[in-house]
Figure (cartoon, rainbow, N blue to C red):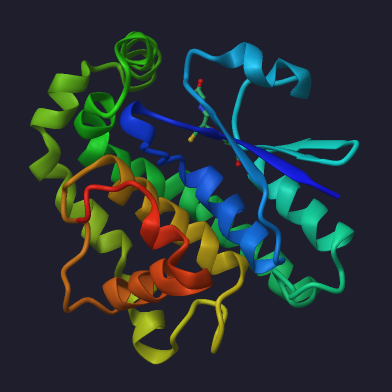
Length: 230
Ligand SMILES: N[C@@H](CCC(=O)N[C@@H](CS)C(=O)NCC(=O)O)C(=O)O
């Protein structure tokens, strides 16, 4: 069966959505190579068939699934003989915690560092949409948020401490080999890397080395994405 993944795109084919990267890595993990359909912020009609307005959207034969967490559960059920994305009920339950941590803590801390760069990485029509929705969300202009980014560095760095401590002791969050919890967190760093030149990690950081291993995985799949190389 052929798969199609609808994913977010900015200008010049920068594909940076953290949620889409989780799903892209999960698909590769299962040995699947979907057709990738780029969707801009203002191209909602392209995914109207899914009954909601966010990407990623996966179409697998006759099945349409949206929401990255729902998609990964679908993949695990639909492809039980391919490598496991969780590796058991306990690991899946723990990955849910990581999912909430990335959505609720890590990504909100990161966006305050890169929001001006994300904005610059969009086509003009999408910039207007992004400005309207994000300024309403934050109660501040994008310029004010971007101007205050140095103040946001310390909370972001503090947040990384348990991730760093874990990756000092083991190569991946999931142990000796990566699985979905790694892809969740990797998606956040790939979001930053593909939308911003801001250095989110220092080269001496164990998180940097972990990210590098994941960039090289699947024959350098994520590493080949259009990025700013930071
Ligand atoms: N809970 C969803 C969140 C998906 C999401 O927020 N996607 C963003 C792209 S990063 C989106 O489609 N944004 C469109 C918009 O803001 O209009 C998931 O895990 O897939």
